[in-house]
Each structure stands twice: as structure tokens, then as C-alpha cells.
Length: 230
Image (tube, rainbow, N blue to C red; front, top):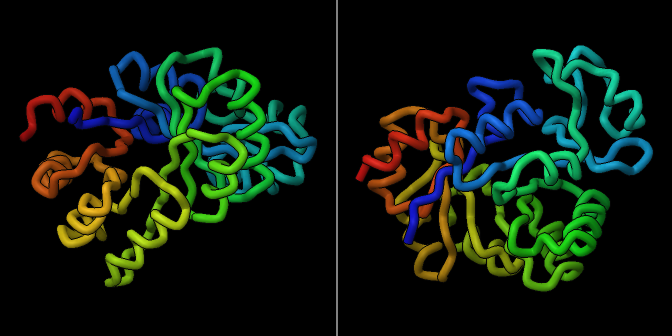
């Protein structure tokens, strides 16, 4: 099976994260997919922002949920880039997308777009919350889902159980906390396993040695290096 390389928020190591500029750079770099984060604006529009607040990634301040789309669009997200609307991303790049949502409202809005634009084969839904993934799967039959696991907590079986309960096809594990036991348990349960964020050659070698199905990376160079790292 192909080893996948997914651009993290585009290629955030070299471009402003979660911007059209970053997504386009990821696509030009040959990434197999692009991971992005979605939140709802105050007026209910899906926008690509990772944090609950805009303070870190723009020249503005405040919670995304408290700002209208017009207010968000007035912010500089880096190098003159604006906060993208999800549908703009869909139109700007052709790559498969891994859309991360962390609440049911955003998941519902994402489901509406996926259904309306017939994107089941192109967009997979990711979250740290299994209930959010289950809701997405209920709303969009056949959609692929990814469970982000920030900490294994020493209980690999619990991680597998969480993924299965959510109906996830893939488990994404922190490359700094990953273990061979967790990878093997997930694979034995029929789950794919990816590592994030893999940004060095040593981390890429570890991902390959553990038998991961793919990685998420901040840097385009990892894509070209990954082709030749066994």
C-alpha cells in the first residue's frame, strides 16, 4: 500500500499555515493530501483556522466564533494572505483534503458541504473527538474518518476501542509519543496509522521502521525524501 505524505495545514513550515498560499504550495510539492482545520465564524461560515482564537496566526485578536466572516477576512493571516473559507479551498486545489473539526456544529456544516458538492471520495473528516466523527459518519454515509490521538496513555487497546467506536478508518498518532505496540494493535484491528508531525529525517525513518501508512508534515522536502526512505 502507498505510503502517504500529507501536508500539515498546507506546508506550514515554509508558508503561513491554513492559507491558500500554503495549500497551493503543498499541492505543487506533490503532497498526497492536505490537512486543514475548520471552525465556524460568528455568522456560521466554515473558515480555515486552527486555534479557537485568531491571535497566533493573524494580526487580529479574539475568538473565531465571535468574529463575522467579514471581520475575519479583514485580518492578515501572514504575507498578506486572508483567512480562507472552506469552499474557496475546495476550488483552489484539487488534492484530497483531511478536514479537522472539533465540535458537532462545525462537523454538521462540513457534512452539508460534502453532501452538496458530492465530496465523499475527496474529503475525510478528522477530529480528536470520537463523537464528532460518529456524527459526521451518520450525516455522510461512507465518509472516511480519522481519529487524532494526542496521548496514548499507556493503553493501546483503549485507543483502538475509541477508534472503532467512532467508526474511524485511520488513527493519527503524535510521532513523539508513538509506540510499536500501538501501531501493531491498530493494524491488527484493520486500522490505518499515520504519524504527525514528521519534520525530520530521523522522524521519517522512525515512521517507516514502525510500518506507518503515512505521515503528516510541515515541510515539502519530506515528500521527496519519503519516496526514497525505506
